[in-house]
Length: 170
Image (cartoon, rainbow, N blue to C red; front, side):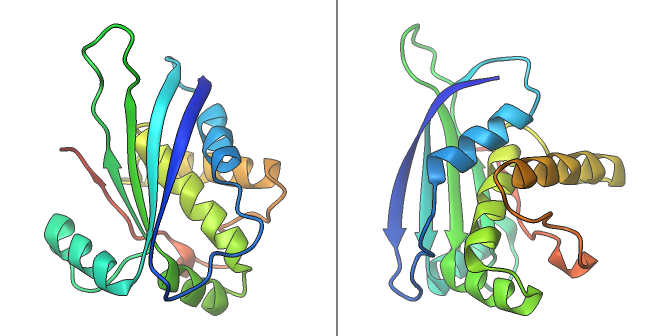
């Protein structure tokens, strides 16, 4: 269930342009609506678009993996105060990697960016793809959400489209 999540966008790169037509709030809301959550999700989320250097640094620091990655998800903290908003978390998306992957996969950059936002949002909502059953469930939700948003199914062409990401509790 989702009431309202406010998306704060940070653009920290000029390496690539943001594809025209990005609808951050709609993508996050659609992902949360499709997530079949037992609790209401409200509050805020930061979506940071970065270049290769920052993505590489974060990927090495938090995942101990070399090189930039397409999306990183960092879970937010739940507020202990009665009327305070929760922080859903932060998504960090490497815009140059989005463009490279979209081109390699024959997708529009906008569709791939939307998919990464949906995918990362589902991680923040508690989904993962650590085993085959969990991956199948998450991919089904992503596909359903992307189709609802008017985009093509994200996993139809091949397995090389798997998203390389993580969720960090902190």
